[in-house]
Length: 264
Image (cartoon, rainbow, N blue to C red; front, side):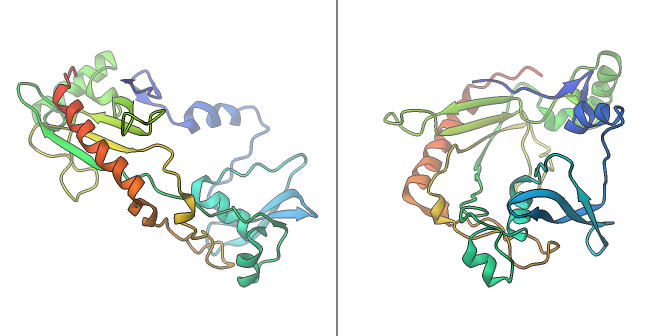
C-alpha cells in the first residue's frame, strides 16, 4: 500500500503533451498534425513505410506520409489493433470476410481484450471533511487561496490518492487485486458528480483477469476506419474464478475504508 504517484508540477497536473511533446516541438524535427484520422499503415511487402490519414478527421481528404526510418503505432488499446487489422495484419479469416487484403497473418490482433470492472464501495465519514465538502462554498474559496499562495491543497491533488495490491485468497501466490482509495464519493449512477454528504470510495478490480478466450470478439467491424471498433464484452466476468475475485475484493475494500485516516 502506498500513495499514488502523480504527474503534478508546481500545483498543476502535468500531461504527457506538456511534459514531453511541447518541449520536443521546439527542436524543429517534430511535426504534430491534429484532426487527422489514421486509416491504415502503408506496407511494401511486409515492411511498414508510412501511414494514410484523413486530413480534417473523418470524412476528410486522404493524405499519405512516408517514413524515412520506421513507423511507430501508438493508437491506444482500441485503435492500435483496429489500424493493424485495417492494414491487413490480423486473423486471415476475419480480414478476408471483410474484403481486407492479408498482409501478415496474426490471429491474436484485436482479440482477447477485456475490461477491468471495478466495483466501488462507498462509506460515510464522520469528524473530518472530505473532498465532497471542500469543493463548494466558502471551503472552495479557501482551497483556491491556498493553491494560489502555496500551490498545495485540494486543487493540487488528483482524485485517487492511495493504491493497494492485495490477494483474493490465502492460496494466491501473488497479488491479483488492486484497490484504490479516494477521499470523496460520487452520486450513484452519475459519472463524476460528487455527493453532498461526507464520503470516501474504495474501488477494487482484478489484475491479470486472464481467460482471454472468453471474449474473442475482434475490434474491426468493416473496412471503414471511421467505424468505431467493437466494444469489449463482459462475458469473461461471468466465469466462476473471476466472480470469486470480485467477491473477495469487496470485503477487502470495506475493511480498508473502515481503517482509513484522512489528512487533506
